[in-house]
Image 1 (tube, rainbow, N blue to C red):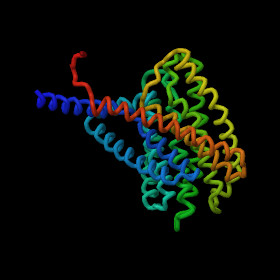
Image 2 (image 1 turned 45 degrees about the vertical axis):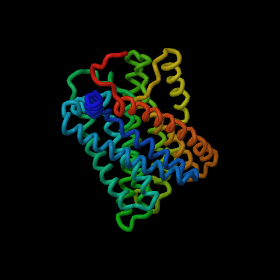
Image 3 (image 1 turned 120 degrees about the vertical axis):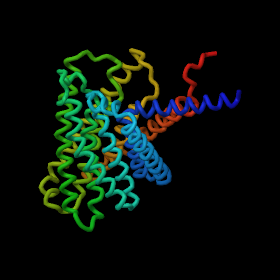
Length: 362
Protein backbone atom coordinates (compact mmCIF):
# COMPACT_ATOMS: atom_id res chain seq x y z
CA UNK A 1 0.00 0.00 0.00
CA UNK A 2 2.80 2.34 0.88
CA UNK A 3 4.56 1.60 -2.41
CA UNK A 4 1.35 2.31 -4.30
CA UNK A 5 0.98 5.62 -2.47
CA UNK A 6 4.58 6.54 -3.20
CA UNK A 7 4.15 5.77 -6.90
CA UNK A 8 0.91 7.76 -6.98
CA UNK A 9 2.61 10.69 -5.25
CA UNK A 10 5.50 10.67 -7.73
CA UNK A 11 3.10 10.44 -10.64
CA UNK A 12 1.10 13.36 -9.27
CA UNK A 13 4.28 15.43 -8.97
CA UNK A 14 5.31 14.67 -12.53
CA UNK A 15 1.87 15.61 -13.79
CA UNK A 16 1.88 18.80 -11.71
CA UNK A 17 5.29 19.88 -13.02
CA UNK A 18 4.23 19.11 -16.59
CA UNK A 19 1.06 21.16 -16.19
CA UNK A 20 3.05 24.02 -14.68
CA UNK A 21 5.51 24.05 -17.59
CA UNK A 22 2.74 23.81 -20.16
CA UNK A 23 0.86 26.74 -18.64
CA UNK A 24 3.97 28.77 -17.73
CA UNK A 25 3.13 32.46 -17.79
CA UNK A 26 5.41 34.16 -20.38
CA UNK A 27 5.79 37.03 -17.92
CA UNK A 28 7.28 34.87 -15.16
CA UNK A 29 10.72 36.38 -15.72
CA UNK A 30 9.34 39.31 -13.74
CA UNK A 31 10.47 37.17 -10.79
CA UNK A 32 14.07 37.72 -11.92
CA UNK A 33 13.37 41.40 -12.60
CA UNK A 34 11.94 41.96 -9.12
CA UNK A 35 14.63 39.99 -7.31
CA UNK A 36 17.41 41.62 -9.29
CA UNK A 37 16.25 45.19 -8.79
CA UNK A 38 15.64 44.70 -5.06
CA UNK A 39 19.17 43.29 -4.86
CA UNK A 40 20.48 46.47 -6.51
CA UNK A 41 18.36 48.65 -4.24
CA UNK A 42 19.45 47.12 -0.94
CA UNK A 43 23.07 47.12 -2.14
CA UNK A 44 22.77 50.87 -2.71
CA UNK A 45 21.46 51.13 0.86
CA UNK A 46 24.51 49.28 2.19
CA UNK A 47 23.12 45.76 2.78
CA UNK A 48 25.78 43.97 0.78
CA UNK A 49 25.24 40.48 2.24
CA UNK A 50 21.49 40.54 1.61
CA UNK A 51 22.10 41.99 -1.84
CA UNK A 52 24.51 39.19 -2.71
CA UNK A 53 22.04 36.56 -1.52
CA UNK A 54 19.30 38.06 -3.64
CA UNK A 55 21.62 38.20 -6.64
CA UNK A 56 22.39 34.50 -6.45
CA UNK A 57 18.72 33.75 -5.93
CA UNK A 58 17.97 35.74 -9.09
CA UNK A 59 20.60 33.70 -10.94
CA UNK A 60 18.95 30.47 -9.76
CA UNK A 61 15.46 31.65 -10.73
CA UNK A 62 16.76 32.77 -14.12
CA UNK A 63 18.30 29.35 -14.81
CA UNK A 64 15.13 27.50 -13.76
CA UNK A 65 12.91 29.72 -15.90
CA UNK A 66 15.17 29.42 -18.94
CA UNK A 67 15.09 25.62 -18.61
CA UNK A 68 11.31 25.59 -18.14
CA UNK A 69 10.80 27.87 -21.14
CA UNK A 70 13.05 25.69 -23.30
CA UNK A 71 11.10 22.61 -22.20
CA UNK A 72 7.84 24.36 -23.04
CA UNK A 73 9.13 25.42 -26.45
CA UNK A 74 10.07 21.83 -27.29
CA UNK A 75 7.13 19.96 -25.75
CA UNK A 76 4.23 22.41 -25.92
CA UNK A 77 4.71 24.47 -29.04
CA UNK A 78 0.99 25.05 -29.54
CA UNK A 79 0.63 26.61 -26.10
CA UNK A 80 3.70 28.78 -26.67
CA UNK A 81 2.36 29.88 -30.05
CA UNK A 82 -0.99 30.71 -28.47
CA UNK A 83 0.73 33.07 -26.03
CA UNK A 84 2.58 34.81 -28.86
CA UNK A 85 -0.72 35.48 -30.63
CA UNK A 86 -2.57 36.67 -27.51
CA UNK A 87 -2.41 40.48 -26.99
CA UNK A 88 -3.16 39.94 -23.31
CA UNK A 89 -0.13 37.66 -22.76
CA UNK A 90 2.25 38.11 -25.68
CA UNK A 91 4.02 41.18 -24.34
CA UNK A 92 4.94 39.15 -21.25
CA UNK A 93 7.78 37.61 -23.27
CA UNK A 94 9.62 40.91 -22.91
CA UNK A 95 10.19 40.04 -19.25
CA UNK A 96 12.91 37.68 -20.49
CA UNK A 97 14.74 40.68 -21.99
CA UNK A 98 14.30 42.82 -18.89
CA UNK A 99 15.16 39.98 -16.52
CA UNK A 100 18.35 39.23 -18.46
CA UNK A 101 19.45 42.86 -18.45
CA UNK A 102 18.54 43.58 -14.82
CA UNK A 103 20.48 40.49 -13.77
CA UNK A 104 23.38 41.61 -15.98
CA UNK A 105 23.34 45.05 -14.35
CA UNK A 106 23.53 43.52 -10.88
CA UNK A 107 26.37 41.20 -11.93
CA UNK A 108 28.21 44.13 -13.52
CA UNK A 109 28.20 45.71 -10.06
CA UNK A 110 30.35 42.81 -8.81
CA UNK A 111 33.01 43.49 -11.43
CA UNK A 112 32.12 40.47 -13.60
CA UNK A 113 31.91 42.57 -16.74
CA UNK A 114 32.46 39.66 -19.13
CA UNK A 115 29.38 37.84 -17.86
CA UNK A 116 27.40 41.08 -17.87
CA UNK A 117 28.45 41.74 -21.47
CA UNK A 118 27.24 38.27 -22.50
CA UNK A 119 23.90 38.98 -20.85
CA UNK A 120 23.74 42.31 -22.70
CA UNK A 121 24.23 40.47 -25.99
CA UNK A 122 21.47 38.00 -25.11
CA UNK A 123 19.15 40.71 -23.86
CA UNK A 124 19.88 43.09 -26.73
CA UNK A 125 19.34 40.50 -29.44
CA UNK A 126 16.19 39.22 -27.73
CA UNK A 127 14.89 42.79 -27.48
CA UNK A 128 15.54 43.33 -31.17
CA UNK A 129 13.87 40.09 -32.27
CA UNK A 130 10.90 40.21 -29.91
CA UNK A 131 10.44 43.89 -30.67
CA UNK A 132 9.38 42.93 -34.17
CA UNK A 133 7.88 39.49 -33.56
CA UNK A 134 5.54 40.15 -30.62
CA UNK A 135 3.81 43.28 -31.99
CA UNK A 136 3.18 41.41 -35.22
CA UNK A 137 1.96 38.10 -33.79
CA UNK A 138 -0.03 39.60 -30.90
CA UNK A 139 -1.39 42.75 -32.56
CA UNK A 140 -0.86 43.42 -36.26
CA UNK A 141 -1.10 39.83 -37.47
CA UNK A 142 -4.47 39.10 -35.86
CA UNK A 143 -7.61 38.98 -37.98
CA UNK A 144 -10.04 39.98 -35.25
CA UNK A 145 -10.52 43.69 -34.62
CA UNK A 146 -10.26 45.83 -32.61
CA UNK A 147 -7.11 44.39 -31.04
CA UNK A 148 -6.96 47.28 -28.57
CA UNK A 149 -9.59 45.41 -26.54
CA UNK A 150 -6.76 43.13 -25.38
CA UNK A 151 -4.41 45.92 -24.33
CA UNK A 152 -3.38 45.84 -20.68
CA UNK A 153 -0.50 46.65 -18.36
CA UNK A 154 1.76 44.01 -19.91
CA UNK A 155 2.17 46.22 -22.97
CA UNK A 156 4.39 48.51 -20.86
CA UNK A 157 6.86 45.63 -20.45
CA UNK A 158 8.03 46.40 -23.99
CA UNK A 159 9.11 49.79 -22.65
CA UNK A 160 10.85 48.18 -19.68
CA UNK A 161 12.73 45.82 -22.00
CA UNK A 162 13.98 48.73 -24.11
CA UNK A 163 15.14 50.69 -21.09
CA UNK A 164 16.77 47.64 -19.51
CA UNK A 165 19.09 47.42 -22.51
CA UNK A 166 19.99 51.08 -21.98
CA UNK A 167 20.66 50.54 -18.28
CA UNK A 168 23.01 47.60 -18.82
CA UNK A 169 24.83 49.29 -21.72
CA UNK A 170 25.34 52.41 -19.60
CA UNK A 171 26.51 50.30 -16.66
CA UNK A 172 29.17 48.61 -18.80
CA UNK A 173 30.36 51.74 -20.59
CA UNK A 174 32.73 53.07 -17.86
CA UNK A 175 34.67 49.78 -17.67
CA UNK A 176 34.84 49.15 -21.42
CA UNK A 177 38.33 49.36 -22.87
CA UNK A 178 36.98 49.48 -26.39
CA UNK A 179 33.58 50.09 -27.95
CA UNK A 180 32.66 52.77 -25.41
CA UNK A 181 31.10 54.86 -28.15
CA UNK A 182 29.11 51.83 -29.34
CA UNK A 183 27.77 51.22 -25.84
CA UNK A 184 26.86 54.90 -25.54
CA UNK A 185 25.06 54.74 -28.87
CA UNK A 186 23.16 51.62 -27.82
CA UNK A 187 22.19 53.17 -24.48
CA UNK A 188 20.89 56.41 -25.99
CA UNK A 189 19.06 54.70 -28.86
CA UNK A 190 17.32 52.10 -26.70
CA UNK A 191 16.43 54.81 -24.14
CA UNK A 192 14.90 56.91 -26.92
CA UNK A 193 12.94 53.97 -28.34
CA UNK A 194 11.65 53.15 -24.87
CA UNK A 195 10.50 56.72 -24.27
CA UNK A 196 8.52 56.73 -27.54
CA UNK A 197 7.08 53.28 -26.82
CA UNK A 198 5.84 54.51 -23.43
CA UNK A 199 3.72 57.13 -25.15
CA UNK A 200 2.37 54.56 -27.63
CA UNK A 201 1.58 51.96 -24.96
CA UNK A 202 -0.07 54.62 -22.84
CA UNK A 203 -2.38 55.60 -25.69
CA UNK A 204 -3.43 52.01 -26.40
CA UNK A 205 -4.00 51.08 -22.77
CA UNK A 206 -5.91 54.30 -22.11
CA UNK A 207 -8.06 53.61 -25.18
CA UNK A 208 -8.89 50.13 -23.88
CA UNK A 209 -9.87 51.54 -20.47
CA UNK A 210 -12.05 54.27 -22.00
CA UNK A 211 -13.71 52.31 -24.80
CA UNK A 212 -14.47 49.01 -23.07
CA UNK A 213 -15.97 48.06 -19.70
CA UNK A 214 -13.35 47.87 -16.95
CA UNK A 215 -14.22 45.17 -14.45
CA UNK A 216 -12.40 44.60 -11.16
CA UNK A 217 -10.90 41.36 -12.49
CA UNK A 218 -9.41 43.32 -15.40
CA UNK A 219 -7.22 45.50 -13.16
CA UNK A 220 -4.47 42.91 -12.89
CA UNK A 221 -1.06 43.52 -11.23
CA UNK A 222 0.77 44.23 -14.54
CA UNK A 223 -0.86 47.67 -14.61
CA UNK A 224 1.81 48.58 -12.06
CA UNK A 225 4.33 48.23 -14.89
CA UNK A 226 3.06 51.61 -16.13
CA UNK A 227 4.84 53.09 -13.10
CA UNK A 228 7.78 50.68 -13.34
CA UNK A 229 8.37 51.73 -16.93
CA UNK A 230 8.73 55.36 -15.87
CA UNK A 231 11.12 54.34 -13.10
CA UNK A 232 13.45 52.33 -15.33
CA UNK A 233 13.37 55.17 -17.86
CA UNK A 234 14.65 57.39 -15.05
CA UNK A 235 17.39 54.92 -14.09
CA UNK A 236 18.53 54.56 -17.69
CA UNK A 237 18.49 58.32 -18.13
CA UNK A 238 20.47 58.93 -14.94
CA UNK A 239 23.09 56.37 -15.97
CA UNK A 240 23.40 57.96 -19.41
CA UNK A 241 23.80 61.43 -17.91
CA UNK A 242 26.73 60.14 -15.83
CA UNK A 243 28.45 58.52 -18.82
CA UNK A 244 31.76 59.79 -20.15
CA UNK A 245 32.10 62.10 -23.12
CA UNK A 246 30.71 60.55 -26.31
CA UNK A 247 29.11 62.17 -29.36
CA UNK A 248 25.68 60.62 -28.81
CA UNK A 249 25.71 61.33 -25.08
CA UNK A 250 26.88 64.91 -25.55
CA UNK A 251 24.09 65.55 -28.04
CA UNK A 252 21.34 64.30 -25.73
CA UNK A 253 22.62 64.73 -22.15
CA UNK A 254 20.53 67.80 -21.34
CA UNK A 255 17.39 66.41 -22.97
CA UNK A 256 17.68 63.06 -21.21
CA UNK A 257 18.36 64.68 -17.82
CA UNK A 258 15.28 66.89 -18.05
CA UNK A 259 13.04 64.16 -19.44
CA UNK A 260 14.11 61.80 -16.64
CA UNK A 261 12.86 64.28 -14.05
CA UNK A 262 9.52 64.47 -15.88
CA UNK A 263 9.23 60.67 -15.95
CA UNK A 264 10.04 60.48 -12.22
CA UNK A 265 7.33 63.03 -11.42
CA UNK A 266 4.75 61.21 -13.54
CA UNK A 267 5.69 57.83 -12.07
CA UNK A 268 5.30 59.26 -8.57
CA UNK A 269 1.86 60.57 -9.49
CA UNK A 270 0.82 57.13 -10.78
CA UNK A 271 1.38 55.40 -7.44
CA UNK A 272 -1.78 56.71 -5.77
CA UNK A 273 -4.15 55.72 -8.64
CA UNK A 274 -2.57 52.25 -8.71
CA UNK A 275 -3.05 51.81 -4.97
CA UNK A 276 -6.64 53.04 -5.31
CA UNK A 277 -7.24 50.54 -8.13
CA UNK A 278 -6.00 47.74 -5.89
CA UNK A 279 -8.36 48.84 -3.12
CA UNK A 280 -11.26 48.99 -5.61
CA UNK A 281 -10.42 45.50 -6.89
CA UNK A 282 -9.71 43.62 -3.66
CA UNK A 283 -11.55 45.54 -0.92
CA UNK A 284 -14.64 47.00 -2.54
CA UNK A 285 -15.29 44.21 -5.03
CA UNK A 286 -13.68 41.42 -2.97
CA UNK A 287 -11.59 39.88 -5.73
CA UNK A 288 -9.50 37.33 -3.81
CA UNK A 289 -5.86 38.26 -3.30
CA UNK A 290 -3.89 35.09 -3.88
CA UNK A 291 -0.49 34.28 -5.34
CA UNK A 292 -0.10 34.49 -9.09
CA UNK A 293 2.96 35.02 -11.27
CA UNK A 294 1.83 38.52 -12.21
CA UNK A 295 2.32 39.73 -8.62
CA UNK A 296 6.00 40.11 -9.50
CA UNK A 297 4.82 42.89 -11.79
CA UNK A 298 4.18 44.89 -8.61
CA UNK A 299 7.45 44.04 -6.89
CA UNK A 300 9.59 45.15 -9.83
CA UNK A 301 8.06 48.65 -10.16
CA UNK A 302 8.37 49.22 -6.42
CA UNK A 303 12.02 48.19 -6.47
CA UNK A 304 12.77 50.17 -9.60
CA UNK A 305 11.11 53.29 -8.20
CA UNK A 306 13.41 53.18 -5.18
CA UNK A 307 16.52 52.75 -7.31
CA UNK A 308 15.32 55.43 -9.73
CA UNK A 309 15.00 58.00 -6.96
CA UNK A 310 18.51 57.31 -5.68
CA UNK A 311 20.13 57.36 -9.12
CA UNK A 312 18.28 60.49 -10.26
CA UNK A 313 18.96 62.26 -7.00
CA UNK A 314 22.69 61.69 -7.33
CA UNK A 315 22.91 62.41 -11.06
CA UNK A 316 20.96 65.69 -10.90
CA UNK A 317 21.81 66.73 -7.31
CA UNK A 318 18.26 66.30 -6.00
CA UNK A 319 18.65 65.22 -2.33
CA UNK A 320 14.88 65.02 -1.68
CA UNK A 321 14.40 62.64 -4.60
CA UNK A 322 17.37 60.56 -3.44
CA UNK A 323 15.95 60.33 0.07
CA UNK A 324 12.54 59.24 -1.21
CA UNK A 325 14.20 56.50 -3.25
CA UNK A 326 16.28 55.27 -0.33
CA UNK A 327 13.27 54.96 1.97
CA UNK A 328 11.00 53.44 -0.67
CA UNK A 329 13.50 50.62 -1.20
CA UNK A 330 12.43 49.17 2.16
CA UNK A 331 8.85 49.01 0.92
CA UNK A 332 10.07 47.14 -2.15
CA UNK A 333 12.01 44.71 0.05
CA UNK A 334 8.90 44.06 2.15
CA UNK A 335 6.82 43.47 -0.99
CA UNK A 336 9.46 41.09 -2.34
CA UNK A 337 9.54 39.13 0.95
CA UNK A 338 5.76 38.70 1.06
CA UNK A 339 5.52 37.73 -2.61
CA UNK A 340 8.42 35.29 -2.42
CA UNK A 341 6.94 33.63 0.67
CA UNK A 342 3.57 33.34 -1.06
CA UNK A 343 5.29 31.83 -4.10
CA UNK A 344 7.04 29.21 -1.97
CA UNK A 345 3.75 28.23 -0.35
CA UNK A 346 2.07 28.04 -3.76
CA UNK A 347 4.84 25.91 -5.26
CA UNK A 348 4.87 23.62 -2.23
CA UNK A 349 1.15 23.01 -2.50
CA UNK A 350 1.02 22.59 -6.27
CA UNK A 351 4.35 20.90 -7.13
CA UNK A 352 5.89 19.33 -4.02
CA UNK A 353 2.73 17.99 -2.39
CA UNK A 354 0.12 17.97 -5.16
CA UNK A 355 -3.09 16.07 -4.69
CA UNK A 356 -3.27 13.01 -6.94
CA UNK A 357 -5.61 13.54 -9.86
CA UNK A 358 -9.01 12.12 -9.04
CA UNK A 359 -8.30 11.93 -5.33
CA UNK A 360 -11.49 12.13 -3.34
CA UNK A 361 -11.87 14.58 -0.48
CA UNK A 362 -12.15 13.05 2.89
